[in-house]
Length: 479
Ligand SMILES: Cc1cc2nc3c(=O)[nH]c(=O)nc-3n(C[C@H](O)[C@H](O)[C@H](O)COP(=O)(O)OP(=O)(O)OC[C@H]3O[C@@H](n4cnc5c(N)ncnc54)[C@H](O)[C@@H]3O)c2cc1C
Image 1 (cartoon, helix red, strand yellow):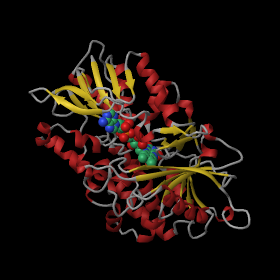
Image 2 (tube, protein in one colour; image 1 turned 30 degrees about the vertical axis):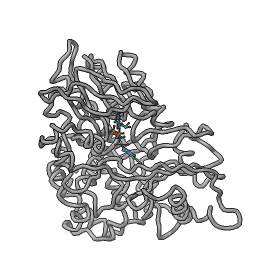
Image 3 (cartoon, helix red, strand yellow; image 1 turned 90 degrees about the vertical axis):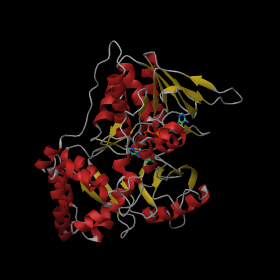
Image 4 (tube, protein in one colour; image 1 turned 120 degrees about the horizontal axis):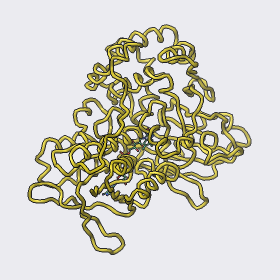
């Protein structure tokens, strides 16, 4: 049975991979000339890779870890020390760490917080614990119910002061969804916190050993094609063609470089395109349907990624850093963190600029200058004196609509992978799954889509897939 999938991001590729496991023949149609969607990367004239975004993998990503194992590439993840490192704006050039000891969860997280005296006073620790611990004890059902509040509103209700919010949660909120705590839904931070507190290695981080396009997406393509599937680049879906009964008749594909448009037919069709694209591509008859109307409640959030190559080493830290800068979110010296980008002599910083709504329309040069001004605060000793660090080259990648913007109430608008149309399914990190807008969410959504297809359109050797979903809410009671 043939399944046409529009979009070769992680969701589309994961869906195709699991469909081949279930005995289907997927054909993935990607509009661009590069694999990966939001994890896409390109090589510049010097052969250096530049990426859509700085990507970190967590211990609490069971479906991603399982996928890497199934592809035989789990050794490509470079696991870092179990620590979280924050810049200290009040003491430029210094860092504050949350070091997780080798203890069972949630003890390791609690000790990490208790041992940190730079960012939280004892009074703040107690205040925070009083707010957070009951929330964790009440389990995932309670966490889900907090989607009506912004995280700032929720903290205020718990009696947690503004200072605690400034110290930790602005950095966490920007890293999770590229927006501030006064915009982000409480469900996002509470979900992440409960995963991190429930699993010993949940917040442990890893970097891929090279570009996601080459080191993660290409093995997926190799797996899919070795089993009879196809992944085609430069294949933009132009229109979803319908039968009279509203089911899909075919994908009308845009012919590129003067070639004529053509129709791709299959037994089942999947959109693994971003929600913003899906919304404009909805066929008119579907627009009346509540299920598809809900997509209007979702929208991608802007973000900017920068990569800067310097003439010297700025740091030897081999870990993600939370900048705590109003302009920037997280960053890393990829010459330390990533084997494929390693350089013992020179730093290559990869930085996420967020919130980006006021920056997305600005020129690369303006964005660069503002970022360099921030770097003077983060690395004061390297940007002052007679011989300041020199920028050798840079790349700026702007994504006006990235993952869905997780403001309060969005959970209600996130669709299931199965739709009211019997031969049409959705995939993508915006679709309903418990890992929000992440790589893990994209991979799991692809798997859920494959499973939903198998349930409705069985083939001879169809079996069930092993889903890795978070532990039941009752486990939270061990906190
Ligand atoms: C800057 C940044 C940093 C991030 N950091 C992290 C991180 O550290 N950890 C983490 O877990 N997640 C992170 N994410 C989120 C993660 O990248 C996404 O959740 C995930 O990659 C989304 O995958 P997807 O397949 O759902 O969607 P997408 O990647 O958006 O894939 C959709 C695909 O559809 C294609 N498409 C669009 N229109 C058409 C058309 N007409 N025809 C055919 N194809 C089409 C697109 O080109 C794209 O390839 C980050 C994202 C960004 C932008």
